[in-house]
Length: 289
Image (tube, rainbow, N blue to C red; front, side, top):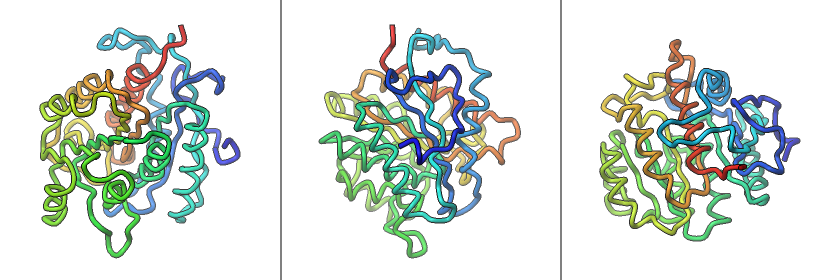
């Protein structure tokens, strides 16, 4: 695995001990299929760089990173512009993490990087449920003739796990065809996050769950640093509350995508992303003490 990684690690408090770590952070700096503004390849490093500005203690979870052992593996080394090979490398790294019975926490990168992550997690965990937080449906059959696109990643996930195992929250943008498809094939909750998530919890209990979170589910007033910003989203407080709501589920994987720091000189998008990573470690990880 490590021959596929660049040494760009550095999330606050990360251990140097891979073997003892339950959660493994890895960056997937790819933005080859973005349809509007590029820059998400810089997302993983921006999340790491601002993490030192956060406390290691979470008052909402009453847990501290000092009590957890997690490893930052750095970024997957990707051949620029080669989509299929890049996805394969991301999948290889995540597959290795899962083979070692660890929890993959993947930082993108564009949303297409979630596809090899989901593929590997679904191969390990039978009956996987996917919780998709996003402004966009991402259910196109293809984008400009390309079936592998950040605009079609959830449609490809349907191919892997079946649409009824996918729950979509906060969606407020897409084509007419995408929404018609979702009505028949997935569990989509248009424009809402917390209320439908709470109602879905009984259906999710006992099942392995993978969370894929596109930062643009959050309103650009709180998270402007993304490639395809969409007004009308949830607040930063609401997406954090959604994560807290999910802490008692059997979450087996998590990816956070579409942070593009070039569009946010204030760094508040990266700071929100970094806090989400911290809270994910504390919510879904295993304490070391």
